[in-house]
Image 1 (tube, rainbow, N blue to C red):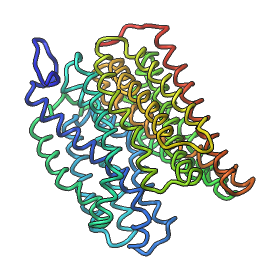
Image 2 (cartoon, rainbow, N blue to C red; image 1 turned 90 degrees about the horizontal axis):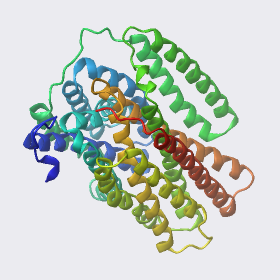
Image 3 (tube, rainbow, N blue to C red; image 1 turned 45 degrees about the vertical axis):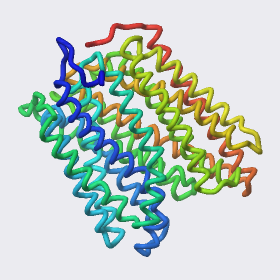
Length: 472
């Protein structure tokens, strides 16, 4: 396979070690994707098994998301001090151990605590996984491996609901977490053996003030988005308080980063307009994806009246489209300007979202599937070239930071998108209840997703105009 063949002058690992390191990183990524996708469908069963309310069980999902979001920037900074291998294996061990703890939990409190720990372990691995891929692969293959990574995530997303349903019906909810244990042990042993021990800078002081401010800023943003989506008077006041806290922490964080001798997140990375535009493009596109992934289940089930199983099948064309497009987009990004390929993909993605928003009142399943497939093809064409652009326009010593920024853009884009759908649904359902109001809210959400994607097209197009040279 070309990904694991060697050529004179290649950076990174030799072919055989590169293969094993890729298995370790991608196994870890698969676990994280499965865990996030499968747990949501198990919340009703978890609530019943632990004898808690449905509202309380939501913290099984939110605890993971909150702890991961609060620590992403911290782990991106620690990577340069501890080294990629040490931090990755620590996060993987923590994720695996806490997965076992989740499986053995006998109360909601214990399960939520284990999920918070699991989120910390997941953040330690996911924040630097793309940077590790850049370390173990030569530049000539960077776009291709990032395309394969996008393909893996899409495949895992498509398979996760079916695997989760099978485990729930045959073995029960603890096995959603227990399945991570053998996979985690294998990935951990491979990581110890083959991941390179890159140079570290342990002598540099750690920016504790910046770490605290980043955790407060990111955590408050997540909680504010969650509260704002509920849209009742009390929750809106809470959302405003958390939002103001996040804004104040953000201002103090930027002030601190400009003055710290060794900042948590070097702001000079954003001096590269190509890096900054790639980050903004990623944020806007994941806002769009977050909106769509929350809105479509309401469209499929509440408006069109499909069953949960049929709704899951209607979701399949989206990841299938990514699976078809991402590997080819990654290869093209190694030969042609990645920004151009990303922009084309975003245009296709926007067209697919507009087609979804224009679905008739009585749509055929094949018509829905075709429009979802177009969205997936566009997003698959966009994602890996844009990720390549971000990593390639950060210096190698800043790879860990760039990888962390990529993870933060993805996390907060999806959270913001989900919150916006909650606000739109609450507003429309306050005007009346019924299928008509829900259909209007869903269509408005899809139009908003299309608008966010058009904004991403604008950010991405600016890179094509500038045509600045890429860093090696």
